Length: 333
Image (cartoon, rainbow, N blue to C red; front, side, top):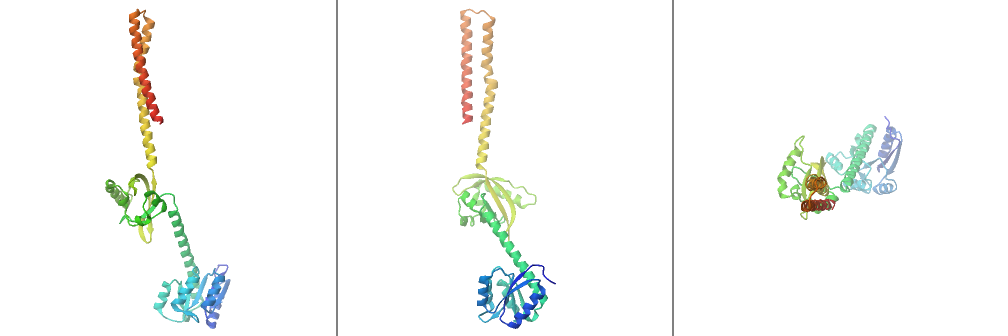
């Protein structure tokens, strides 16, 4: 059975010539194309790793002339962090095998049990496992970048304890607390006292399947300023803990703008009422008086009286127009 990968780069750290010859034979048998580098000591392995770092796997004998056991594992894992390490040993010490796995090696094979097939399987599984570990680390790093570099405030919170588990820079800038302060706080600390009861109801709703917690709420900054924020939530596992990732959008300015528009609309409605009712009354009187002048031949006294009514109505109309102008200016401002 041959592996389909075009080429495998393998570093064998083994000081026993016979054991190395057997390992080399197994590798050539099972892999279509394999490049084998060989070191007989830790010093030589370190020199090889300085020149070549793209090994797919490292096969490590635990007893070398210049290093052995746990210290050898630590040294090799330190100098070749991205390559999976498979320990090959003649010691049938199960406890040590388990301990070596905890030190970061991928597999542990006794030399007396070594065959071409179990060596092949161990290499393939170890390489694939290492690839998945690297992919997971890259994914976590990308999450961290997206989280901490987001322009919107974001935090991770445990809804059971209400404690902050992580916050990004935008949250720190908006709320005024340091990251260290946030990690000692709970959600109650960013809500006005009178809002805490509603917050707890919202959290209970968030815990229920299909629950609809409120998305707009009031948050309190460190300096006491109150802001309206729009919240979006998503379930999230953080360091093995069930948590919630929250994105907060400050909509205080938006709501204030809408309130100002509503107040302006109310003033415009007042202006409209004035135009349709208040102005109509003196205007109707003026129009009626003008018609009287046209229809009747009034003497001097009657004419002065009619002109007095016209003047009074004109003054009233002038005052209404001034009021309209004043309200219009207020709306424009």
